Amino acid sequence: MRFIDYETIKEITKQLTISAIYDLDEGVVRKLEEGKRNEEEGISKIVISEILENAEIARLKKIPICQDTGVVVVFLEIGNRVHFDFVIDDAINDGVKEAYKDELFRMSVVRHPFDRKNTFTNTPCIIHIKNVSGDKVKITVCPKGAGSENLSQLKMMIPSDGEQGVIDFILKAVKNAGGKVCPPMIVGIGIGGNFELSAKLAKEALIRPIDDESPDPIAARLENTLFEAINQLNIGPMGIGGKTTCLGVKVNIHPCHIASLPVAINFQCHASRHKEVVI
Image (cartoon, rainbow, N blue to C red; front, side):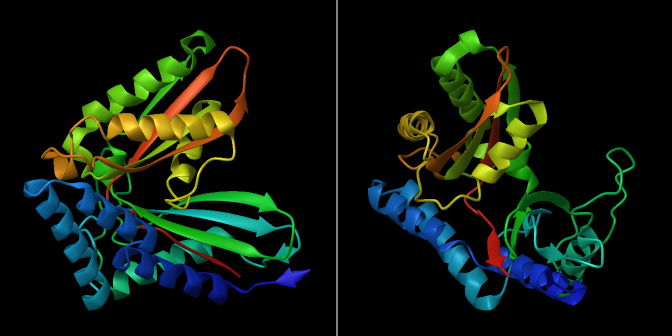
């Protein structure tokens, strides 16, 4: 049995949160540079250049990539031989509180959906826990802004809708999102499970490496088909038109009920903020 103390979890969460808000994922930067090369001379290329410049300034000067520093989503993978003598949610939330207070990040969490009073801690976080074998803990911290989140969709489709029905639903959602999700976007898709699991699958898809491909052959085909189709919509960087609407499409699959075909779409803007560590 391995014991991990409260301070370790709290401090790691704090540092991951700070790093995510300042340092754009290197894979995303490479995809943006690729998109810039593919764009024609003009405003689309200029916009991607400014996105890249913004990311570099944020990294060097320790300024948030985006003023919307988001709600913090945390994914935990906890080995079965790890023991805590505290509630791990408390350590995660305390680490995030310290990060937002010390770095003067914008506090974006309200205590109730209707009274809209700010918690002034940017907590509670949204925490997902997965139990795995071993004596390690993997912490992934994802500050998620509201702009791209608000355009996300979920639909309980039926099996007869089939693969083409899913493609049509996703493309319609992308068209509806347009420039409001601050493209070039990453599109996370969850297919299967049930109502709530499909949404979680879509969120998890967004933290996959930008260059990877689903091990499921049908999902991999969908990723490629949708990536090509989305980039032909001419939405372009920040919605001003161009070839680079999408940096990546990630499809996560899960078994489901014989009568169901749940599909969730979670959009991510170009500021794809997430950091992880295994301890």
